[in-house]
Image (cartoon, rainbow, N blue to C red; front, side, top):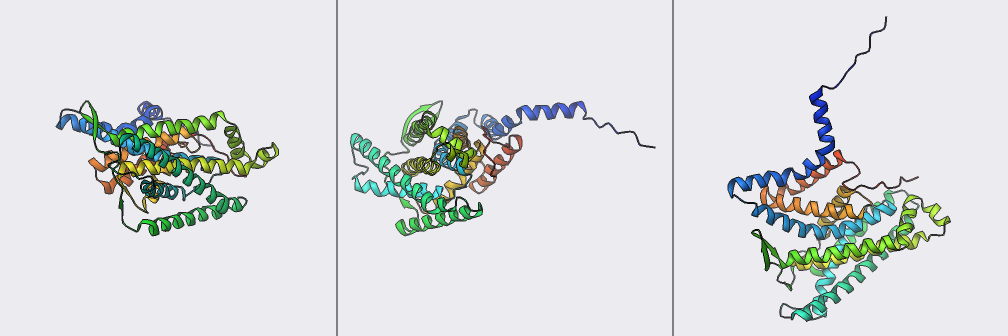
Length: 352
C-alpha cells in the first residue's frame, strides 16, 4: 500500500517574506549601511552632514574605479578573460602622467590657463601610452594563446601584471611617491547642506562623465558595437561574416587602455601620491565593480564602481579600513545572491 503524498506548503508569512525579499531585497542590501549610519548621525548630530560627506568622497573615488572597471568589462565581455594586467596598466598611466608633469613644466605655480592646457596634453599622451601598452599586451601575450585552454592566457595575464609591477618598482622605487598638488584638490569650492565639495571631487566626477559618455557613444554608434557583439557570441561565425576579429579585439584593448590611462591621471591629481602596488588594489576593486554591475555591461561597470567607492568611504570612516575589503565583498556576495547577473547584468557567451 503506497503512502499518500505529503503536501508541503509554505506558510503565508514565510511566503510573504520571500516575495518581499525577491522584489526589494537588492534595494535593502544597497541601502542597509547608509541608512544605518544616517540614523546614527541623526541621533547623535541631528543632521546627515557626515554621511553626505562620505557619499561625495565615495562617488569621487568610485568614478576612478569606474573608468578602470570599464576596461575589465570590455575585455571580459568579448574574450572572457580576466585581464589581471589591466590594473597595472592603470598604474603605469599614473606614472606616465607624473613623469609628464616635468616634461610640460607643470608646477603648483603654473597659471590656470597653462595648467589646463598642460593637463590636457598630459591626458592625451598618457591615454596614447596606456592604450598602446594594452594593445601590445594583447598582441604579444594573448593573441598567440587565443585557441589555447583558458588557463594559459589567465596565467599570462598574471605574468604581465607582475612584469608591470616590477617596471613601476624600478621606475619610482618601493615607497609611495608624492605628486605635486597641481589643482589643490582639497580646496573647498562650494558647500551644499553642510557638505563640502572640493576641487578633487569636481575633477573626478567631471572628467569621468564625458569620458564614459564618449566611450559608450563611440561603441554604440560605430560598427565596433556589432563587431564586438558578434565576436563575443561566436568568433568563428564573425570571421565568416567578414569581421576582422583580431582588429576588433585589439580595438577593445585599446579603448580599455585609454580609459585606464585617463583614470591614472585623475588618480594622481586626486590622491597626490602614486606607487607601484596601486594597480593591484585598483584592479581588484575595479573587477569587483564590473562583476557587481554585470560583466559585459558598460553602464553596470560604472554603477558598480560608484557603489563600491561609497561603500569603501563609509566603511573606512565608520567601521575601519581593516574591515573595508570584508564589507565590499560581503556586498558583492549579497548582490550576486539576489541578482546573479549583476545589477545591470548582461549575459555573455558560453565557450564552446
